[in-house]
Image (cartoon, rainbow, N blue to C red; front, side, top):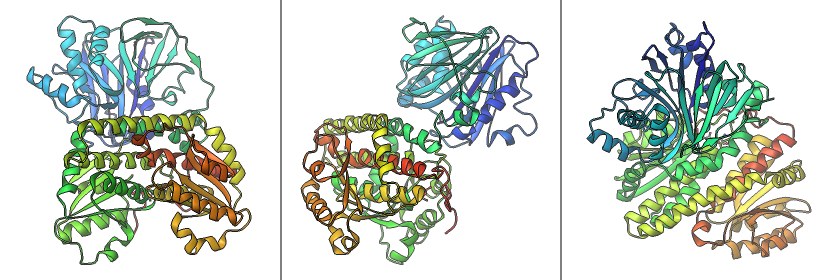
Amino acid sequence: MCGIFGLITKKQDVPVARLIREGLQRLEYRGYDSAGVALVNDGNIELHKEKGKIVDINKNGALDNLKGNFGVGHTRWATHGPPTAANSHPHMDCKGEIAVVHNGIIENFQELRRKLTERGHEFKSETDTEVIPHLIEERIAEGDDLKTAVMNAVKVLEGAFGIVVCHAHTPDYMVVARRESPLTIGITPGETTYCGSDIPAFLPLTRNAYILDDDEIAILKPGEVDIFTLDGERVERDYITVQWSIDAAEKGGYDYFMHKELHEVPQKVREQVRMPQENIDAFARTIMEAEHVYITAAGTAFYACLAGKFQVTRFGKIYIQAILCSEFRDALEDAIPENSVVIAVSQSGETADTVEAVRYAREKFNAKVCSVVNVVGSSLTRYSDHVIITTAGPEIAVASQKAYNTQVTALTMVALRIAELKGYLDKEEVQKYKQAALKVADVCDEIIENEDHIKILAEKYAKKPNFYFLARGVSLAAACEGALKLKEISYNHAEAYAAGESKHGPIALVEDGFPIVFIAPPDSTYDRLIGNVMEMKARGGIILSVVSKDDEKIKELSDDIIPIPHDDDPYIIRLSAVMYVFPLQILAYFAAVHNGFDPDKPRNLAKSVTVK
Ligand code: M6R
């Protein structure tokens, strides 16, 4: 997730560079590890890009002083390649005449890069983006105008993109295109046209906006926009007039960042499923070659570990020991055997206990470290042998949700790769599981589209002081995460237990009206879970169950259900972890709002816990 802002205007004496820099700053919540601006100036491209925050990069006016009539800027959230000047956007072609900014992930960039290199192109960065200006360069060399060149170039891209392209020798327009990544256009008719990843970028300048659909490109001229499909057919569309305040616009029209980010979960899961195979490979092989595997994290990330460890055991037949990072050292004092691997999972990559756990294992016992991290270049990545970057992008709400779901998805992809490498699954079956993982994202789309049902339930249960969350198997991770979410943002006391454990103590608290949330996918745990539901019901418990849409038995025993709209397909059922936890995160969100709390900033909590 990155921020893009560009403008082209007819007005004379407009501080184009400063307006682009200010637009980028309004998008810094989308990414802030490096930034750059390119302007078209009299047949040349003026470019400045650097690592760091925009305010620091522009300290001596490095961005504001760029000369030119129109152009584009980018604030980066690193995915491919660490945050460095070379990896910052805009990226250029060999001749330095085409500047491209990009938000998204080009899945086939390695193959494209290899072919372009064979044809003599020189690359200056490690990014996936850089293939785009080189592809456009080739098309222009073959005689295409800029519009046709971009159209032809994006046709060969696989993955997600929102791009803006400027060409030194095309002085009257720039081109934008998108697929699965956001890109909006703002317009003051007859005068100025803007483009931005989100509407807030241009909201102080205009309230008129065009929203591009997938696989559309647009030609931006001063105060004029022409939209086309990738096949060149003109699209007739009027701009809309946005009524949001800037604050609401930053939240995409939602009341809270958490709500906006919950709506982003399906797409982020999709991007994680499609992450490059190479990223998974070294990770999977390292785990396979180890004699002992540990997995560690804190909070929600630890529950992602529980789900992930279950999948690695299920598919790859490797037992992994999960240890909370704050307990890691005490639990394993002087007892980490040779040839061990520690998997560490973290959104921030800065959680002090997680970093300390891996350093302890690495420095004292020579253990290998594989981490699943959301922030490129964070401390944890520096102590890791192999890193998988999650596709969550910046998460503003303190409560993890995009991060959790992409962490579980990433670990599931690792589990499938191990199974393939060990010969437990053939290529075809792995493909079926990947298709199922993409269907999981579609199911999450349906869940969030029908969030009103969850809202009604949240309002019904929000004032209950105590909850149990019960489940078996992989769903225990969902129970733990569901309880933590409710606790951390809605301040209801909630405890998660393995359902079989509930009769060894917890059941003593159950009386008339005590709410119990059951997570009950139709997997091998289902029949045993029915017994636990009955035990709770017999003691007056109110049962809220998360079940398949086709469920009959547990539905009949429950007071309320959240139906999960998935097929009766064994592949998708084995990937239940994400789609059965997602509604619980939504439930916690609506409970918090109903109880009058700000879910983005829960009391006493910080997004990144850097103290031990
Ligand atoms: O940045 P990390 O993923 O390492 O953070 C770990 C926990 O602090 C974090 O998951 C915390 O539990 C969240 N607030 C949960 O929503």
